Structure formats: structure tokens, C-alpha cells
Length: 461
Image 1 (cartoon, rainbow, N blue to C red):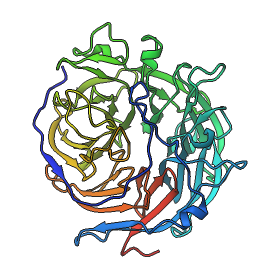
Image 2: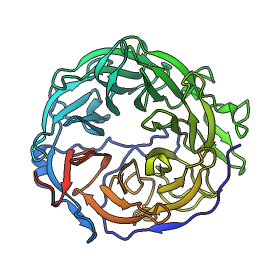
Image 3: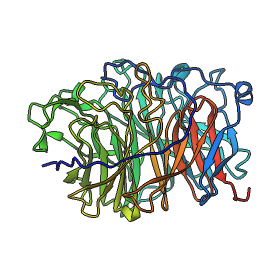
């Protein structure tokens, strides 16, 4: 059974942020119609005319300043927009979204000089027509079939009903980041958009991709599932190992249609797999299943994972488990909830915010705190992504949150039961999608403005 926890600690910070352009729903079956990433993408000339970024930090933190920035290069006269961002061995890998027709691929930036990020390669942009390449993960892999740096790239269709195409994920050898080489492609159910988010991990001598394929269950009438584990030890021949069927849970009936869940609180709630992460040793998977919460699996046997537990919500909370991160050696779970429609009958009036759990006992997540920003309850006229939290990343005792209009927030989680906002970076007209924390810098991807390279105020450049 999924355990119920209704104790909540409301924590709000006080900062003033600018408004932001509109955005687009990750829950595409939601009836609000709000969209993400379709607004104008700024040219280099327009970016140069923007006001300086807002930077705020507490006295005990030499907070971030913008060391460098770079808009994506045009491809054949098309200006794409950014999605998520990842870093590996001194290079940034920037995914792209749907503006101006998609197929922007992954952009590789050399970060040797943080003040001057240089785009040195593009890949995965011309493999599958009419798609976009939002998420990219890069890891050093050593299996019997491949040794080097492997990139996995999510592929989603602009039209899920397009003939003769399907989404999924691409695998590329990026051992030489300036010369990526395609190795393979794993395809999901063809009548979904494809793989939305994913992660890549090593487990012994196996390389595994954990893939989130939203609505595969719903659109295939249960024949396929939203969460899949794939063996990519041989990247040229990816092999599906396991799929998660939510109907194994006591709370989910056998006639569940893959999306509309009649929850124990009497509400009909949306359920689909949005994202997944794993711990460094690939012992556990943390699967963001929207209103089913963040589900924890033991994946030590990736062909036979074991369900352990799930986070849960008060009856007046929209679930919207969007993304997750781990802290304190894997004993603390950070869960971000992307809520773009804050006014719904029967629910609290609020955009999405962050929840923090003690998961020392993986079978019993305990809610420690909830973290809100000043945007969380700033209700606009109609739905918008501008005011909701997006993705979490953790470095030491600092939690970094990408937050669209809010840019990047920094939160001290030394005491996870009492998170404290300690800083913020927000470009003018911010629309920050992703954040990634490296030892030497923090990267942010702004959908309209491109890549931002941030360093501590006292860091040498």
C-alpha cells in the first residue's frame, strides 16, 4: 500500500522576480491548454539589449554570477530553443525543445573558458524527422561491448500519430565530444510522443537506461508501459528488460486505463511517468509518476525490480510529481511538483513547489518539509508555467532549483526539515528550464536565451 502523509510544513521565501513568457504542459492530456517553449526565441542582438541578470545571495554564501552565456547557433537558418542541460568532462550538452519546428538536436559547448562557452558540435538533430531532443545524459561507460563516453538523448515526436516514425532515445559515442558518432536507437510505442526524460547508469558491467515514456500505457491500452528499463551495454543493440505496470499496486485497480486514476481520496487524478533518476550505485530507481507520487523501486535485479514505496499527497494537493534529486548520501529525496494551473476545484490555490523527504527507510518516506518561493502563490489570470518550480539538483548541502521566471534558486538544506533560500540568479525575462551543478560551475538553460554559465562570486575564471 502507498502510505498516506498529511503533515505539511509551509516554507516561503521572499524575493521579487520579473514576469516571464508563457510555457507548455508536460501533462498533454490536461485540458488547460497552456503551452511551453513556443514563444519567441531571442537573437544574440536581442539578448545584448536585455537588462542585467538579477543576483541575490545571503551573507554566508558567495553566490553565483553570470560568467558567460551563449545562444544556440542557427541550423540552416533555424533558431532552436534550449531544453535541459548536462555537463561531462568540461563540456556542456544542451538539449533542444520545439520552437521553430524542433530537430535542434544536442549542442555541445566547450567550457574550458567559462566566460566564453563555444559551441563545437551538434548531434541527434537529423536522425528522426519532426522530433525534438529535450534530455541528454552523458556517462563514462565500460562494458564488454563499449568503453568510452556514452550520450543518451530523448526523442519525442511533434505529431505522435505520424506514420513510419516513433520516439524513443538515441545513443551516441561522445568520447570525442567534437565528433559524436551514432551507435543505436531504442524505440518506444509509436503512438506516443516518445521518451520524455531518462537517466543512464552503470550497474556492475551493465549499462542501463531508465526511460520515461509518458502515456504509453494509456495510448496502447495497457500493452506498453510508461516506465522501462533498457540494457544498453551494447549501444548498437539496446534490449528492453522490464516495464512497470501500476496495476500491481493495491491503490490501482485492474481496469486502470493508464491515465485516469480513481485515488483513495475520492478524486480522479492524472497518472503517467514523467521522469526517473537512480542513485550512484544503481540500487534504487525514483520514478516520478505524477499523482501516484515518486515511486521507489529496488532495481538491484533490473529484470525483476521490487516496489518499495511511494510519496503521497494531502487530498487538497495536486500531485504532479515531476522530477527528483537525492541528498545526504541518498537518505533524502527532493521532489519537485510542476503545477501550472493553480486554481482547480477541490485543491489548494498554488503553483508547484518542492517537497523534501527522509528516505533512510526506503519503504517509508517521511515528509520533512515543503519549500515555496514567492512565486508559488502568485496566482496569475489563467494557467502559466512561469511561477512553478521545475527541476532540482543538489551539490553538497545546497539545492538548486530551475524555476522558469524565477531563474535559478539556491536553497540551504543542511537541515532538510528547515530549508532556507540563500540565493537566486534570474536573467531578464527569465525562462530557465534546466540547471546542472558541476564542481567548477553551475549551468542553466534558458529557453529563449540559451546557455548560461554561472560561477561563485569568489571563483577564479
